[in-house]
Amino acid sequence: MAESLSRRSLLRGTGAATLGATLTAVGACASEEGGGPAGQAGPEGGAPEETFTEPSTPLSGDLRILVWSHFVPSHDDWFAEFTKAWGDRVGVNVSVDHIDVGDVPTRIASEISAGQGHDLLQYIAPLSQFEPSVLDMTDVTDEASRRWGEQLELCRKSSFNPATEKFYAFSPGWVPDPGNYRRSLWEPVGFPNGPTTWEELLEGGAEIMSSQGVQMGLGMSQEIDSNMVLRSLMWSYGAAIQDENEQVVLNSPETIDAVEYMARLFQDTMTEEVFAWNAASNNQGLVAGSLSYAVNSISAWRTSQETNPDIADDIFFVPALGGPSGAIAAQHVLYNWIVPTHAANPDAAKEFLLHYTENFAAATYASKLYDLAAWSERTPQLGGWLTSDPFGAQPVDKLAFLAESVDWSVNIGYPGPSNTAIGEIFGTFVIPNMFARVARGEQRAADSVDDATREIESIFSKWRDQGLVGG
Image (tube, rainbow, N blue to C red; front, side, top):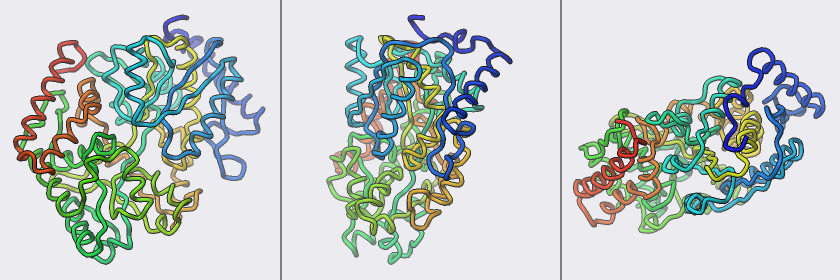
């Protein structure tokens, strides 16, 4: 099959025959490799046993994969072995290229423009703007849900366009975005358990900056973390780019209030460097001990466990901060996998994604609990890992709060989907620019919000005219 793995081939032999074949294949793998049912812990409670389901069609040829260089390096070591083992088993020559996360969008755009390159590409932010140039992943998503139950809504909204009824990406996992704070810095200012609201963040952070000279780490630059945290602030203030019907609603008193708050937070707790940060800057600052608070995944803390254990033991976490309208955080990473229309081996790409999702517990473990599954059935041991961290957390239950992280996390584009307009807005950093202009003193909040609204409305109109945005 040249174009894609059709629904018919994915579900060939539906009903009892398919289920029986799948169970036979999994059981055979478990028997051959000494494992148990998919997703079960390994023989000594370590890495989960990996399982294998025979692809629905014979595979061959090359499979070229492009992925970001993971912030937890142990994941990339595991992924290299994982892809090779699968390729050897199914007769596909798999090659994997890792590049810096900031270079991925440009690389994807370049390959799509050239009409050649990798068969399977991954990014950790919306890829909806590439929908016209990628294969519909509905068949893979439906098959994953048939096997493993319901997909998390925030992952579905990160990969499905309701206007076209297509999955422009496959989203098998995600990463929460908690607050990371230094307890030794926050305890003297009256917040030993960290801030719980944006107002407490300002109060405590300003006192730490004044009395201890340690700044905060919330970026307003053209990089992914700034995009995430500023949306979280907006949502907590009751602001949003669009509503649930994909209508632009940015220009509101709530947005202006959020922008004015961020200007105060910058003036009292930060320095000019936050306007030039890249995706690694807040990680590096936290690991170096030069930040009192950052909004990030657990990766910087994991790094500090190896490079600076005293800092690691001093870093603790808080869920989404509360604002006038609630406590909401953006997912820190959304694992979007796309197969471009120029892919030479789409069948192998789609079958590999099912194998990867089947073994997501291994990905979670290899990433030291950074990657969480979109199909929660795939990681039955997650609760135990979070309450008793297998990688040396002090205390061992430091990550237990992540068990509830889906309750305070939403997709990019909330309360609507991550449509093509949202993807372009994210990729062109309209929101960080809007906040930065005011924090720098270049514009009043109302004027900056007005300028951003005109820019966003133009983007929405362009994509709506192409039938790729609803409303």
